[in-house]
Image (cartoon, rainbow, N blue to C red; front, side, top):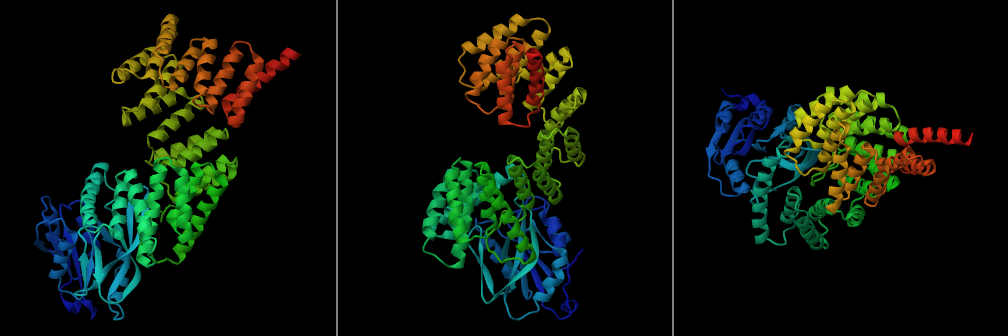
Length: 587
């Protein structure tokens, strides 16, 4: 069955269009691609380079003209073969993992009727794990007026004048599984390294290889090649070189962030902003850097400027050959603005920003989590519960949201609900150790000691060295009347001279459980040397002093905890009790 209009008369006098594609094992995406173009073109030309799946069958069902050529490690060679088979006036080049926006077909048909240009830029929106990017590329051009060059990330070399359009293509090839993406980056990287060896000063090849290294998380290579690329491009002032330079800036900044070199990342951003003060990518990542450096006022400035520039771009799109990764990051910008306001103790503004983030993207779990945690800090636990429940009902609850739900239920004195939530989480992710730890604590809290013991035994067999699980096992023994075992365990661990500072945290909390408060204070104070701003630990130390009847140091401890976190409910409640006890003593 054919879906194509092959008779020129059906075109009502307008020029005809050939869709040209190269494919190999594209059964996953091909049908949706061909469906999107079937009413836009007069013929579909497919060059297959060795498919072994159902690609050919799918192509045949759409009436495509199929040609077979062996793969020779060159995308351009394969694409140029497809161009030679085309018979229509114009060519529309599209990949199998792309679709054409159906609503833009009438625009495409109008534009090809013009004689004042020979190639048409389209807007390509790429689906990414974190959102969508946008860039422009020539995908529509007159037959015989263009060819491809380069074995990978090939460029279209065309004659004549181009025209910028907003015809939309959607690309899905970057939103694959980790394994699929690793295979894709390995193939692309090998071809790019081959090209760069042959053309060591080619900025376009270098820029694409830098991005490939970033995608492979090889940040040292990004830094090495990125710094070389910036030096190479310094004397170049042409439009293409400036675009490649901006791409290198973005990738270099991310490499510095991921290697904890925030000062260098900020410096590179500042250089990039001098050259292009309206770059959405640079504005957004500068905000992220400043947020990490806890410069919240400065971060707010860049996130807000990002939103201003993006709003302007939405109203009047700016032609840009570079890929804009942060094109649809408005929801992330508002989420980060919420974090800044929260850190600046402006909860009302933070709430508005988080809600705006959810409105813009109601599929992102982090937005719900941040808003729920804000409500918890404001002691609005019921609101927090509503938010996480909404997220889970919408089917976007990730492991973190399930964990947060359990914590909220525990705060609301609903331990059995929290237990059920943890069981659901463990069913989703049966190696989630934090979920097991929380579940076991809840079982101990509700005096379900047999189930707690069974749960510890079930998970500790595959995690025999996990200190937290061992501490919980000793808590259960203590609850069953065996305090000596816990004391012996504590001394055995201490004698091992562990270099892990978290050991003191876990042992200190176990000492609180078995009512060895002097030892608990000693251990938790050692832990504070590696985590001096841990509010819960400071509060626990103060609680130990209170248990020992030492009210003055207990009072000082609760006040210190509230200095670190003024909204710490645990410290606030204990401080209120302490003040009453001290008042009674003085009376």
